[in-house]
Amino acid sequence: MRIRVDDVVLYFDVDGCELVPEGPRMVERPTIVALHGGPGADHSVFKPVFRAATEFAQVVYLDQRGSGRSDRGYPGSWTWEQWADDVIHFCDALGIADPILVGTSSGGWVALITALRHPDRIGKLVLDSAMPGPVEERLAIFERLGGSEAGEVARRYFAAENAETIREVWERICLPLYSRKPGGDPDGADRLRRITWNYDVLEHFRHVLVTQFDPWDRLDKVTCPTLVLSGADDPVATESAARRVAAGLTNASVQLHVLPNTGHGVFREVPDQAFPLLRDFVTDGTGSST
Image 1: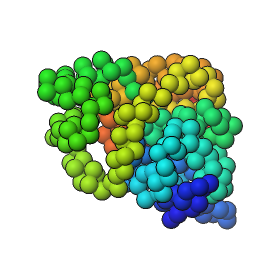
Image 2: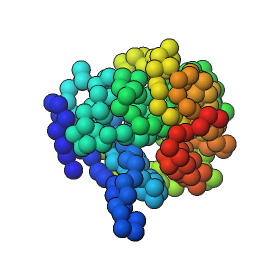
Image 3: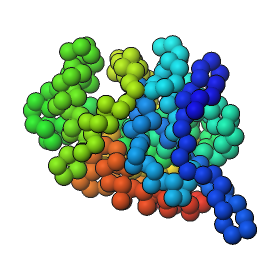
């Protein structure tokens, strides 16, 4: 489905019911708005695993401006602030009053900026494998997981080397290290093929946007209950960064869960652990500090 939001038409999909029958009543369930990473990927990265959340919530998947099946817009509009404002305008257009934003990877960056810019419009916030660790720490993890070759490829990629020379080797050497599933991620290759990529957004991120994401001194502006999920072996959104963001959310009720033997994308990596945590967080009404 598509809907106009300001100057672009955004693609979205819906899984699960908002209203469910319970005896003589129709009971309203919370609505999750799922924000994909990349940047420049699309909502397909959540499928099929995120269907598990429809047992306790309605799930709305959004292809962000410039990505997937949504309008490209123009490069000047590919900013954290614009993506965050798009989320609010999208929710307004659909009448989603208290969205639970679930952001995975750079989608977590968008979700966090949304909560910073619009603290009174977010019901709850979920940051999955979201916060970037220091470059040297990321390089050390890549080298630990994949040897010196992986460490060198990661160094070149993080240094924004030209896409024509680095993308293929990055996808071949480093992306498989995102997962710590025994035997690797069986759906990983097919999932990458399913994505409707806009690599221009990804390159804009590597060269420009990565340097413009600096929310650390504003985290006290977030006031909604927040769930932070991190994989202990995530080579990009590191455990130390997850702990840092949780500690900085001083005006929010925070749950932090660091899952062992887990890589990037906790819901994909360990769904049997991640979705019960999400269910409890979504349905308990407040969130709790751990």
